[in-house]
Length: 105
Image 1 (cartoon, one colour):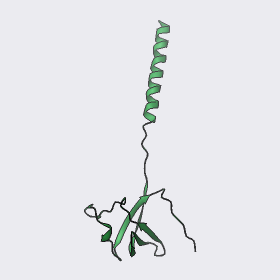
Image 2 (cartoon, rainbow, N blue to C red):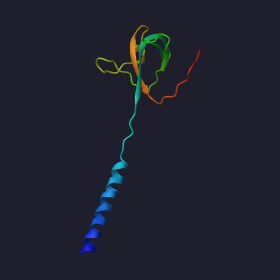
Image 3 (tube, rainbow, N blue to C red):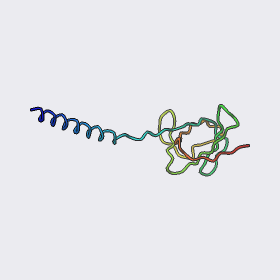
Image 4 (tube, one colour):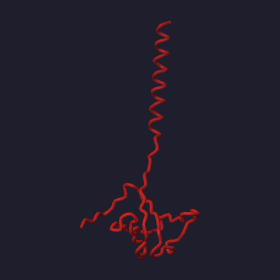
């Protein structure tokens, strides 16, 4: 009788241990985004130059390709890359691990 209980408990421990390992492997990867809010100072072919609102010495160039999703803020409707204009305020979101060239004075 004691052997049957011991074997049964051992079987339960192994079963629940295997189930726990299966659950740990299904963790989804979290993707973090950063944002940059500013005013467009120059519109180039396939890119826009944006000056940050809070630090006027900080600029960023955003390349616009076919893979970039462009949305109008209020309606969330898609817009074309031809809708950008100098003086327009935008917020751009990009992946946190996006490679960037740094420039120092």
